[in-house]
Image 1 (cartoon, rainbow, N blue to C red):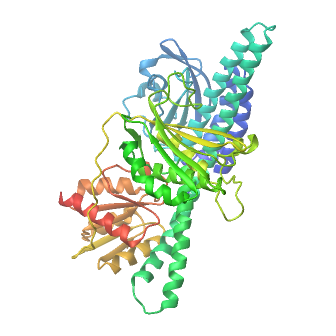
Image 2: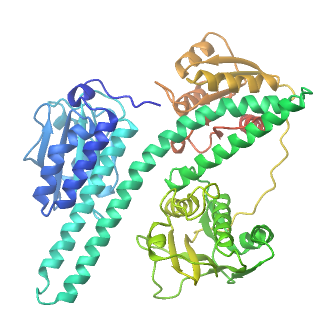
Image 3: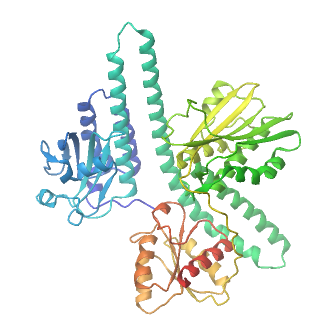
Length: 572
C-alpha cells in the first residue's frame, strides 16, 4: 500500500519516499566519517527533518539525570539549549526504556509533559534512543497534526538512530586506537581490524535494512497479484469440467504460481521479514523425524550421519522454517558431492570458550551443523555465499537464495550462522539456535477440515478489487452468500444499515482503518461475528495474535481451514 504522509510534511520536504532513502544514504556516509559527538549532532540536525518528513526534529543528549536539548531544526522554536529531568520528558523515557516512543496525540499520552508542549506546534511525535547498549542520546521527530507516523517514517527515524549509534561506537573504537602507544604497531593493527569489521557490519546492516524494506513492499504487491491467479486456478481445478486439456493447463499454471509463492517466501526469509511461529522444540525428535527425508534427498551415493547429543535443552524456533533450512543445506551438500561422500548432521552444546558467530546475542545456544565432504569453497565464494542470488550452480539449477534464507532465519530467531569451507575439504554450515525457557510443546494432530454445511453470510473487505472478487468467488463456491466492501468504513456502514454477516473476511493493509483495527472494533460491537484477516505481508506482526489470519496467496482448502478456526473462536 502507498505511504500516507501527514498534511504539511510532504509540502515541507517536497521529497518522495525514494528521495528520502537516498538522503538517508548520504547521511549514513557522513555519520561513518564523524569523529566527535558534535559532528554526529550536526549531521542529524542537518539531515533528519527532510529524511523523516517531519515539521521539526530535536537532538537530545543525556546529562546525568537530565536531558539536554542541544540542537533542533523546526518550523518554530522548541526547546534548544534547555535541560529537563529525565523522568519528566519523552526523551528521558525513550533512553531509560531503550525503545521508540510513538505518540499520535501529545494531549492524550501520560508520558508527555503537556504544559511544556502547549506553546509549541507539536501535536504528535516519535522519539528514538541513540547509543547501545545504554542510550546516551535521543532524537525526536515532531508533527503539527495528530496521527500515527507512517511505517516508512518510523523505519527511517530508527535506521538513522542506529547509524548514529554505530558512529558513536566507531568514535569509541577510534578513541581507543589513539590512546595506544604509536610505536606498538601490532596493537594498532588489531584495533584497525576491529574498526574495519565494525564498518563492514554497519554496511551490511544498512544494506539489509534497505533491501528488506524493498522486499517487503514487493512481497505485499506480488502476493496481491498472485491471490486472484491462484484463486481462479483453484476453482478451475476443483470443478470437474471434463476438459482434460484445460485441467492440464490449469495444473501447470498452479505449479508455477506455487513456485512463485515459494520464491517470495524465500525472499522474505533472507530479508528477515517472514512471519514466524516459534515454539519450544526438541532437536533430537526433529532430527529423527527428518532422517528418512534427508536420506531420500541426498541419495544412496552419499552416506548420511546424524549425531545428536543426548540431554539437549529445547530451542525456540519456527519448526517448519528450520526443517526447510536443513533441507536446503542438505541439497547444497548433495550438489557439492557429485561423486558421493558423507553428509553429517550434528547437534551439540557449544564448548566452553568456543568462538561464537559475530553479533550473536548473549544467552545459551545449541549448535546444529550440516557438514559435507564435497568440493568446498574458495575464499571469494565463501565471502559471498550468503549474498542473495549468489550461486555457483549453472543457470536453472538454483535461485541463489538458499544460504541467504538460512542467514535471514537465524537473524529473526535471535541466533547466528557460521560458515567454514576449504577447496577440496568440504563445507560446514553451523546454526546457533537460542535455548527455550520452557519445555517443548507436544505436537497435536490437526483435525480434518470440512467445508461448512450451513455457511451463512460473509462480508469480504479488500481495497484491491481483483483480490476481493477472487476471494468472494471462492466463498460463493463454498455456498456462502457474499457481500463486498472496498474498505472498513464502507463495511461498517453496511453493518449499521442492517447487514448481519456470520463471518467477516478482511484485508489488513487498507486506506483509513486497517483490518486489525476493524477486527478489534467488530469484537467489541459484534462479538458473535467470526473474523478472518488476510494479509499480503506488510503489517502482519501488528495483528493481535488471537485473531485468525491467512497469508496471501492462498488456495480454497486453506481458506476453509481458516474459516473453521475463526468460527470455532466465536463458538467457544
